[in-house]
Length: 452
Image (cartoon, rainbow, N blue to C red; front, top):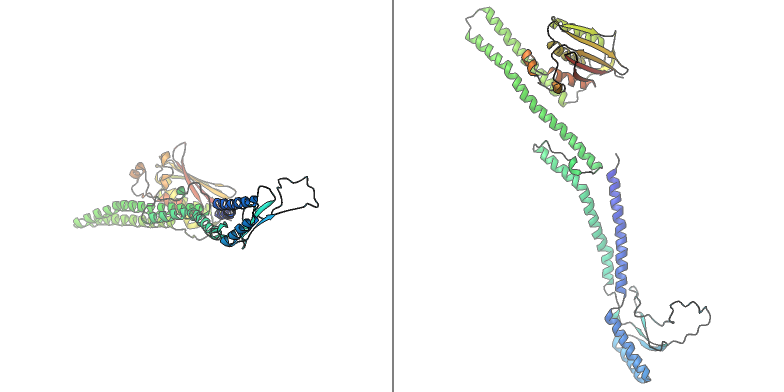
């Protein structure tokens, strides 16, 4: 198993987790930056304080400036001071000042405010002279990020939950789609829709679940074929039983109606009844055997045998049963098979040979040859009968199949011989196929493995 689904889930989960941490980091940084800046109204108010203090400072009224600072401190519950920094540089290279504009006593209103400190920061609002500044503790009401703790909690808890929910939905849909299709197909199949299939509903998907769908389709195909085969078998069986049963009815009626006729006539009718009864018995037995071979996995007894001995017995029986037909055999001295089943192979070859003899005209011949290959034996049975239309070369192995000309030729045939032969050969890992001989007649080729 390739574990495609495992690696696919790993990829989805891994990508989802990485995306989750990335989005959380981006969102936290974005909201933290936005919430760290002073609001426009706070900036404007601080600038107004600076302008007011600078106006009083420029007037030189230090007592008024002192009163204003005291009022500001009391009103906002903060501390504030008007300070002048006199910084003397004692060491250092002054040529590399970059964008340095002076030494700071507090934070500029354009800077971000830390959201994690307990105490309010000190803000510096410089006057126009560049040396004097209003240094004031930022009022608590102006501190940004009042909703930062709630926002951070949401970003660290709710956002991951939302991403995980989305990831779960993706995984759920990916996994449940084929399972849902399998469920729907199973329900439809249980209601008698034997044509339902799943694999084509999954598109190009190729993983363990698609393999499960393929397995379901194979199972559905086999069960559907078996059910349809059983239906056809029952229909054909009922049709085939009508003829001998009708003959039995006629023979019985005649026997009851003409009781006064002689013993000889009665004996003929009884023999007819016995013959039709035997036909019905054979038909039922063959049908049950065929059904068993089709629907079960038969465990046949494994045994060794000599294929030449088996063929010679069948040829002798054929010559006795069809004395007006000629059988020519080209067989080696022996053909040993290590593991096969004598009964299954014998019945299959007997049915094929009987079929060849049945449709071979009188005084015509049936040829049987055996070819020894490295790992298998090939048995060729060729008759001089009418042959089979090309389109029916595979159909002749279907139960109860008979070509019209063959049916009219011999009504004792039920059309089960070749069907049984094919299935018995399959049970021992052998094969059979048919073709028409260019000179006329049908050629059946049976391939039997030699075994271990």
